[in-house]
Length: 226
Image (cartoon, rainbow, N blue to C red):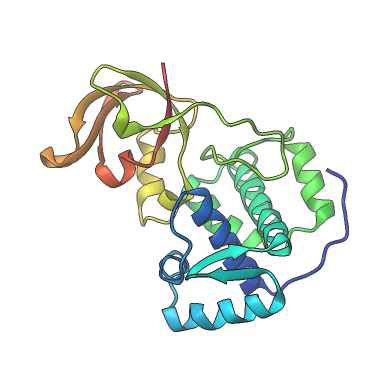
């Protein structure tokens, strides 16, 4: 990807466009309440920021649903691309954990220049996904056929494909998934269709051990059936 000159936006606009993009990507309703939850800010603060973004021409509001304009989408894709590329660099090249890389990438995404972005892409061999399997915008990513983990029956085999962004923002979950070997490319088998303490969820056997996954995660983790 060749370096290019891009308009600079306020980091807050970048954060909000990124959140809107990722909520839509995860099929979560893009309304002010969901943005407030994702960014951990008050609803009045979100309301004020959305008004500013509407005035700047990067979002529109239709019956409470917030949508990115062409300029907003371009900004969101740039920020998301740099975040996911940074996560890949931090894990693959520097050996950081998933959780640490996610936090650090949140800082890097605002300061990576087009020149550095292109250099990182070359150094990493032009990856198409972040470490969690989420697509890097602007690459030749081709989505595999996937289902959520909870849709598989006992005895079904699977390969972990993707950990959606929604799970990355759940406290402690990235650490749990990484330690439990629920990593893209890892193969497992459904051992039971109940989660912790008999609650709704899924128990899987992966890398030689049993892992109990609650309903919230098992309905969101995407896998390929094998």
